[in-house]
Picture 1: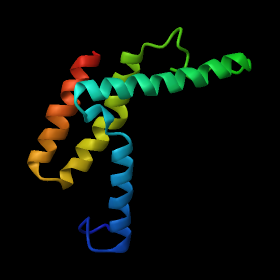
Picture 2: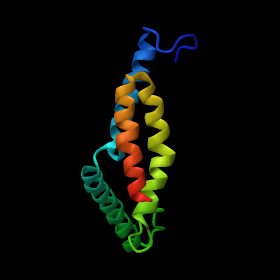
Picture 3: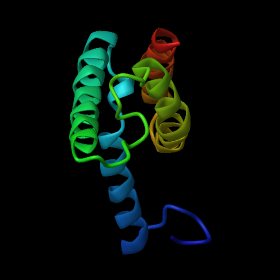
Length: 117
């Protein structure tokens, strides 16, 4: 990454922004409207639980949060939002107009964060 004025018009900075765009799009589900977010969350957690079921069946140590009998999906999602999604999207939306930032962070992420608490 350029050390002077990021983002400059260099191929390295352009690649960094493209990588951030892909990474942000992969983690933006908690910013969607509540119904879409909870549908996604249920599907995501079921995928994790199925992996945990396989790990149990094979007598492996079950990956943290993948045990359907002990995991609280709302606690998991709150941690995911606070540790991964929020810092990522706050940084990413610095490159967007203020209205986009408000839409993503205030109307999407903050509203869903209240729902999982």
